[in-house]
Length: 566
Image 1 (cartoon, rainbow, N blue to C red):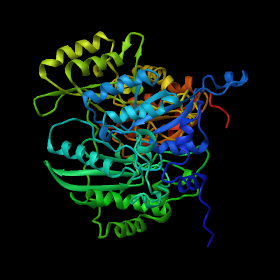
Image 2 (tube, rainbow, N blue to C red):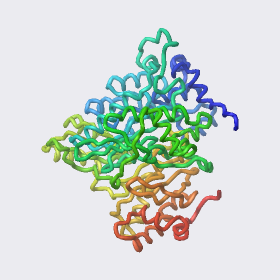
Image 3 (tube, rainbow, N blue to C red):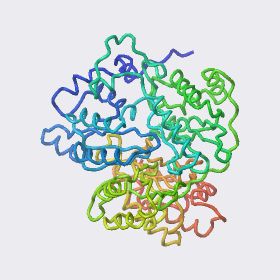
Image 4 (tube, rainbow, N blue to C red):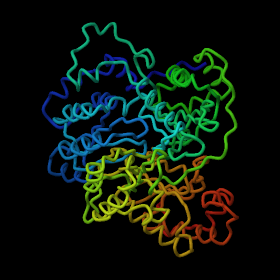
């Protein structure tokens, strides 16, 4: 038997951090724009990442100047739910502390970019004044709990929203470090008595994602989570929850022992056992997850290494009782939630597309000003979606015309003005702020969509429901390995191309090409679109068609003009 491997440096840091305090207080008080590596890793747990402007880094280095450092601050909001007052407060903070934009994440949250170190504490304190938090929005803990976003006023959606809020509150770290550092709470008199009953002194081996959905609305891609919770109802009566374990899309190029994976249904828990079951899954990952190799520290690798039977037995030990097998599921669906919809209480919501999730004023498209005006004038309560869009809820029937007029006057494109490809596309921020990005994503999202739209139109497929996800690196923040088409950054200007997933989020894509120039992505897809238009079976989606033909047959049809050498 081989000896145990030593813990990673991050594990040693967490163990010595005094429950996430480290030397953060002193570092945040110091002058200068950057923090140490230790502070960088601990600040994640408090909801912020240090970043720098990669566009200017080389030029500044040549001039002998330091990098242009700033911070991304992420807000935790279970299910993406906000009040009108909270949204307006966040909007104001974008100017006060950020770069004048709000960014909707693929996990139904909000990120601020461009916050300087001297404003970090004040910005986080201001977010807390809205009754929101940044605590545990990042780091080796349970991140923002996502949930089916449609603001329907029925028992099904009310229960899902309540479950997401309950779990989000229950799974926050117990440490008071966040409150001391950012909210001026008095320091603990006796740190030796502090504990983390759920997480333990070194928290989890890696980030942990939870999503709650129903089979009728998988718009959050529930199976991409470490723990995907599928709520099962009979009418409006909750039967319980299927637990699907081991989802996660992050991987590393050229390292075959890392890979994307969809969660596997493992067990069923009753309506009153949700928190108990979730805490059992977290304890399983806490105690057995890999703490030596952070690239293989997610729950998916533990399940594949130990097996599902072992995982079920171990989970029952933590749960304290036998666990029933997962119940049969109907096919997953992804309904349209953009546009106008009746909530069920006499009011309506309007789903507004936000390209790449960036709420900003750019040229004639003044999305940020328009949304602020609608929320202010009509009292709309926003819900953010995992598709990076915004649902403006609680609008009166008489508001429909004036709201649409206001949005159009500000150049906002509504859902009916978009092709399905544009409507169902995602992009991560990537360059210039993300330190992991290998290529562009958000900044090339629009031209990539336009080029692929043109090819679809050429083959009579413009109105086909096809999902597209663009990321600047293989970590998968925009879920590129699910859905119909995935574009993953490999190096500046070049991308890996994935196809063959399904629109409903129940099958992974496969790699078609490894390094294709951005300008050739649409060209590489064109032969596939031609074949799909001519050879598809009745009711077959594009991803289904690609999966049926397989990678080898598709590669023979799709030869990119310029694929970079390995």
